[in-house]
Image 1 (cartoon, rainbow, N blue to C red):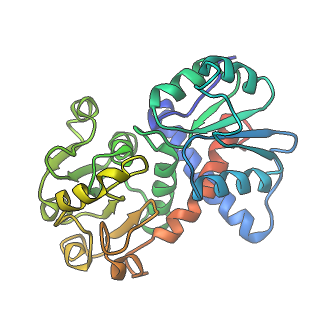
Image 2: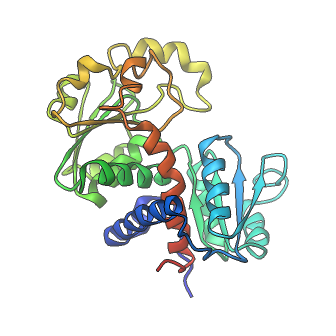
Length: 304
């Protein structure tokens, strides 16, 4: 039997992604109504972290426990991944002992190698190139708040980073238009842009991207591993802050999202982040829990 991995949104067809989101919404309701089942009883999730995270660890570990399974946290100090032992050897050994694995690492090529040699499903919990789990949570949040995102306009304001790359894939999978506003030299992956040229447009003017948009989203200007570039990036991204003035150009019922952690006064104003009429960042963060639970059940073929 072929093992199904989730390294990018493109690893699953659009209809299955929508089923996962629908199931995530059901799981969220069941948790709140105290009617949730325990379909992962006896199942073990291995969580491999080469990049630290608050939301990723809590959401996967709590989600696995809520589904009746157990989770193992493996920090960089706990594994030989890519150091003393080849990635493929680690994959073979770890996957022989657990039922599903999530990996949060730097190079996307590393998780691709790991998945190639894994006997069980591998989930990309973030690489330098993609962050597909966050996109599941974002799409779930939009569906809950506004309904189907198909045919809508989404504006990305800021760095063309792993989140931006994943939004490009999402534009194709969920059938929306994506407008990207970023400074020159900070564009997203060029090959990805060419592949989805019919879905996206790139500008250096945030106002053009946000005008009439149904969803506006951003991320920190300096991601993990780019701390030395922070001051340079602050200068380069001047004028790219998402605030009430910029959001006033969006559609009247537009939402604001941010994958967190957010730096108030930099990529987003404190006032907008806390404006519950526009900002849905806290729902978005919580939905990592529900979307990933639905994803694990889907990959383990336990979804009902």
